[in-house]
Every structure is written in structure tokens, then in C-alpha cells.
Length: 462
Ligand SMILES: Cc1cc2nc3c(=O)[nH]c(=O)nc-3n(C[C@H](O)[C@H](O)[C@H](O)COP(=O)(O)OP(=O)(O)OC[C@H]3O[C@@H](n4cnc5c(N)ncnc54)[C@H](O)[C@@H]3O)c2cc1C
Image (cartoon, rainbow, N blue to C red; front, side, top):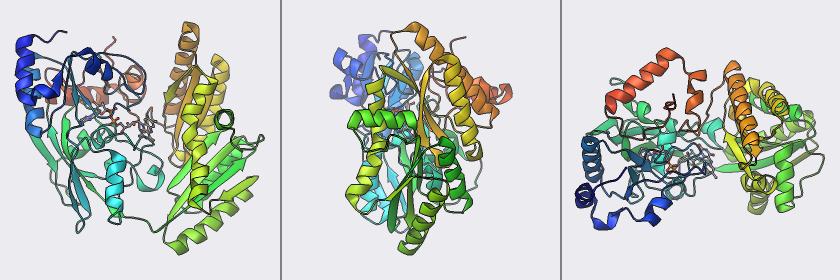
């Protein structure tokens, strides 16, 4: 799609000539996200205010131009990709922390604020914003609300939707609406805030986000346990939860991921390790001390052959470095990977991991698993050479089987990365026709001309 000069000038009038570009360099910079797909926008705009976003959407809606909101483009499912061209609307200039209200423990931010920068700011005041996608050093608040990001601490503290209490949203028609309130409780009418959280930039553009905060925990302990069998590790997860301890992180890493990390950084992980758990607990110093001892005993009772508690900041870093290195390490053993983030009820974790292993064997593909075992959210990585079509086909078949088994076990296609365009063809495996129609009706009601992030969530290929 070409944006004619006359229309370009109208957009330029709204955002200012320095904040609109159809130069190739700007367009290429907005043609990718973390999925490594490629789709070029026709023009990029960097709005500065709600009014500018509103005017852009109004004009785009009149002219039926697709608009794709973008934060840091770290999404894993193609959410920010301009698959039908049109406008990439980069929200990074709207990056102010508007208010931190200590008395009410709430904060209002613009969407372009980086998650970790916000977390650091509130932590200086003894407050805590728990949602922590591993991408928090670059992901934006807007992108994380649109994806309802999770992260390591989800098992204890929940995900983004558990913290967002109000939103300012610009609808695809350009109308500006306010949802929710600054009050922590509100049952006035339908919960529109929740409708927009996780809507993947398809229903409206957030220009102001209000979140609740909680007190910063006083003490944190980190424990690593190594096992000679996957089942021992997953049984440990169940035993910890059954003992009524809820860790703030309970991460699972399988043998293939450990091998990749060993190759990548020569880590000191022992060769006989088939699975590892990284466990982090927080709270008052007395509770944390007591629970650390209980957790270490549970690990030993489930045949952990190494149980280590970090004693210094450096050791904490060292223990977490294994987990953080997995993604880059996988590229040392494979040219590419297909990444999925299914989530099953915690009690079905062992069964699901066994199913995944069988599916890998059936389709002749290597699958590496790690992730947030505490909430049943597994990051599945199918290792592939993207230049070999036959390998890609087998990997896609494996994905289809994995999704079917996930749904059979009461799980969901995505725990935190969303549907985007990479999973839209599988949506109907989980969402039944009536509910799917309702979702499409909501989309059509808010976006009658289908200009906001078209090509996402719903399958447009048939
Ligand atoms: C190394 C790595 C680790 C990751 N770890 C995690 C993890 O642990 N947990 C997790 O949940 N995710 C994780 N992710 C995925 C991703 O980082 C998150 O989904 C993140 O919240 C996306 O933020 P972003 O600013 O990059 O959004 P983008 O990728 O730019 O956009 C994501 C979606 O949000 C929409 N959007 C952006 N801004 C707005 C706005 N203002 N209003 C409305 N819609 C908007 C876009 O259109 C798109 O659909 C990871 C990604 C990487 C690369």
C-alpha cells in the first residue's frame, strides 16, 4: 500500500515532520520482532500525546489504513509486525512515569516506559511492581499490557492483568476512553480494563496505564537443585506447592537446555544432570530462612543430587545465569527454533512433558523445554534449520500435536506470549465457535473497518 503525498502531509501535520518517516531505514527498523518474520510498514510515526494518537487513528480509519502499535518489538508472536503494511505507530516517545502515589500504592505511566526502568523507580521507594518478563530491560509497559506479560514471578504474584487497574485507550475510530478507576476495587459495570489487557493491540491503543503496587519484599533466597530424572524434578515442584510454600520463582530446565548451556558457556553443571530447578522465595527474613530449609529438604527427599543456596549476590547471579543463557545457547546447537509457551494445570506438567518427548520422537525433531514450572507454563523450543522445508514441515506438525495434547490436558496455547499471527491458525483448537464469534463481534464493534493491527489473533488465511 502506498501512502500518497497528500495523506502523508496530513499525518505530518499531526505528529510534526521529525516524527514521521517513510525512509527505508525507518521502515526496515520496524519490519521485525522477536519472531524473525519480516513485514515492512509504509510509514513510521512516533506520536507524543494521546491527542496525536487519536488524530492519527481518526485519519487512518477514514482512509482505511492499517495501524500497528509498536513498543520494543520484543513480542514472540508477531504482534507488532505490520503484516498488511500501513503505519507502524511507535509509542516510545510517550515514556513518562506520570505519577507514583505512595499513599495509595498506585502509579500511572505512559505506554513507552520500559518495564525494568519502572520497576527500579518504584523499588527505590520500597514499592514493588512484580510482572517481570525476562525481556523487562527493553519491553515497554504498553507492549506488556497488550500481551498480558507474565514472567518468572507469576507463580506467586500473578501476571500483568493482576496489576493494571485503569487505562486510557484510543479506539480505532480515534475516540478516547477511560476504563477502571484509581480505586483498588470497582464493580461498576463491565470490566473494560480487563477486556483490553491481552488484546494484543487489536482493540485500542493504550496511552496511559494505571497499575497497583505492593510493598517490596524484605528478603529473597535463591536455591538451585539438580536431578537425574525429569520426573524427580516435576515431583519436587508438586511437593513444594503441596507443602503450602509458594516460591516467587520456580523454574524448570531440561537436559537438552542444560547441555546447550554447557556448550555455550562451559558452565559447571554436572554431566549426569537431567533436569534442574531454580527456586526463589521471598518475604520476611524469618519466613524465608525457614522456607529455604524446608525447600532444600523437599529437593533432597525427591532425589536431588545437588542442592545449592546462593550466599552472595554473585552466587545469585551465577545460579540465574544458566537460565538466562538458554535462549542464546540454543543457537549454538541449532540454526533456528520454533518457540511455544503452552500452559497446563500444574498437576499435568509431568504428563505434558512426557507427551512432548513422544511427539518429538514421532516427528523426528529435537525439542528443548524450560520455563515457569510453578505455574505450568512450559517454553517449548523445537530446534530446526529454517532453510530445510522438510524440517520446517515436521516441526509444524509437531506444534499441531503439542497444541492438541495441551488442550486435552486442560491447558492453553499461550501462557504469556499471545497469539499474534504465528498461532492464529490454531486458535479454534482451544476457543469454541460461539466464543470465537463473540471475540470477533467485539473486535468488529470497536474496529468496524478492521484498521487496528489486522492479521493478528484471528486466522485470516482461510
Ligand atoms: C528475550 C525475550 C524474553 C522474553 N521473556 C518473556 C517472559 O518472560 N514473559 C513474557 O510474557 N514475555 C516475554 N517475552 C515476550 C515480550 O518481550 C513481551 O510480550 C513484551 O511484553 C512485549 O513488549 P514490547 O514493548 O516489546 O511489545 P511489542 O512487541 O512492541 O508489541 C507487543 C504487542 O503489543 C501491542 N502494543 C504495543 N504497544 C501498545 C500500546 N501502547 N497499546 C496497545 N497495544 C500495544 C503491539 O501491537 C503488539 O501486538 C520475551 C521476549 C524476548 C525477546
